[in-house]
Image (cartoon, rainbow, N blue to C red; front, side, top):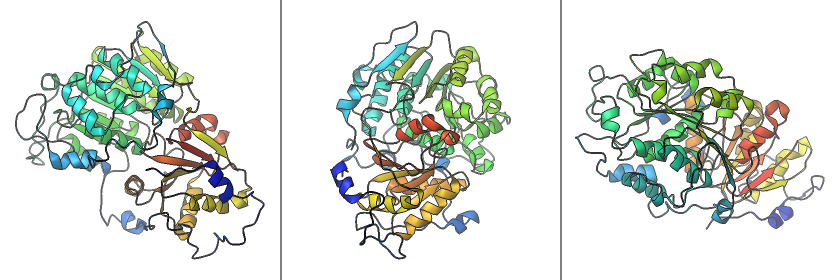
Length: 488
């Protein structure tokens, strides 16, 4: 049973900012703020990572389904990999914190020349039977609002714009129908791929010719979508891959040379590989998805996006486009106008740029010098549930990380000055629960969707200089049930 954090308990735990607590001394060296409710903190060896030592793990190297013999559309089961991808079967359906009564009531507005009838269940969607099995393995029992409309739209062949918050199920909304449509056609459409189990470096390399390209703004989101693709590609005979900055180019070149049908990537690294046509070409591309479009456009990726959208040798007439975003600014509308078919359909889940109804927001006012003590008291009352703390700067992330670690709290942090190996280590620790408190800047956390994040704390509120209300919207999308704000 999930722990909950009621407002009454919080009021008792948090006196007014000016009231002094004579028993709590969170600033004292050796003070233990975990109160036995959090796991033991684990130090990260940044020196070893910086020098290339230690356990070098890259998200792009995670195992995907591989097959050795010729099969039809569906490969045999692989129990060991199935357990790695989908986890313990006894808890796959335990979607703690999701209030489906609230989700069912979320309004979806649709625009476009074609009216789309939403699906009521995955079994009614008309997807491939093997995809239905993967959906069940993922523990997805009911489609979310964005999935109800997007899945039938893509299956019908429409270009799609989806405006919905992070955590609304956008990734599965486009992966499920795209992969399902390609099943049965993969052998006809896909390029030759060497046997990944007997691959010989320097002998068996091929050019990667993906059928699906998913473009995302951040490395962490790229890895996250790749992991979702690994699940939904299970036994489909479609091979997923991911490329992003911070990982040695040679490492990812070798992965592409084994063949790739579904490619996820960040703009800079994608352009790098597109300029190496012996490594990557888009001439077989059938589907392109732009995810977190508002963030891509805010970061002015136009120089990199143009060769991805219209270069790479793809046959534009055969490419179906989908665009997903939490907000829909003018730059995103212009992008849609230039690349999506005039007959595209558009869905808004809830009101664009708003928070969702199943998120409770609480504001705790404090002076700047009181925020650390208030934060520690807040964490003392929690019970080891995943918590994201947002700050506005890299220095603030480092300082707060050190402070909470010295309070014996299991914390990790992530920002753009960290190496890719450090960032991936932080995300692994957060997802696994070894460090259930994650401190992050808004940019690095963009698009991250981790199950059972029940608390989000704005240690620094996003001012206009840090994205304002749009950044606030993205941050609040990280949560399932609860939101706590600490203004400056």
